[in-house]
Image 1 (tube, helix red, strand yellow):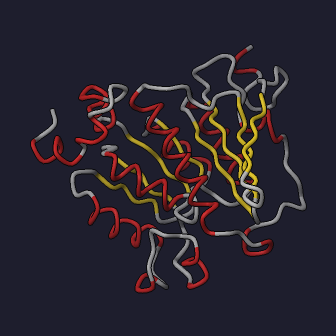
Image 2 (image 1 turned 90 degrees about the horizontal axis):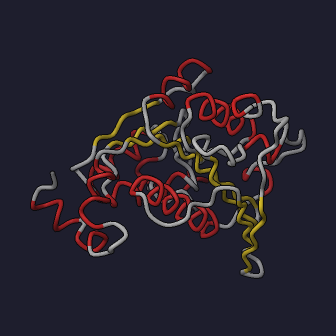
Length: 251
């Protein structure tokens, strides 16, 4: 049940007929893994904690650097040199002491990633490199867990939801294949801060929709964001029957 403090804290979203008490209880009972606590993971973690998602599993092996602070809004100047997980826990605990925070401070290998994904209801990929995204996707497909994936670089962002519980849903590999060896990171190509905030906020919204059970998730659709022209475009994405990750699972 929700106590009096929780009813007051979440009252504005409980007022929404799409959420109500039942949706809030579903959020409270949910467990979520956030992979990466940088530009995308910051708004994701902040909004999910504020919304009352009961258990947040926080995964990041890095420490806070001064160059992070332009966009990674969960961290502050006093956190420079501190583990990103510990910095995030300090901030999230201050925002909402009602939730549980589970720390993953070291890099997740195949086994530990599989265990981390199996322990939650939903995964948010907020990482900044293709190999991590591929590994997270494979673990989610294997465990049958929905994945909310976001990316942002320079002045462009992307967002989609991959849900292996739905036979028509593609996975990340269906869309991107083996990626590109020339893939750049934000440290090499740059990124504008509000863009990662926008993509991360949309990731948090998609997660809340999936967890509370309302709205139409971004499954089978890829949202493209052009921050330079403030334009949004949507592409339909189909599952690849021959996909090396999810193809055989749905055969």
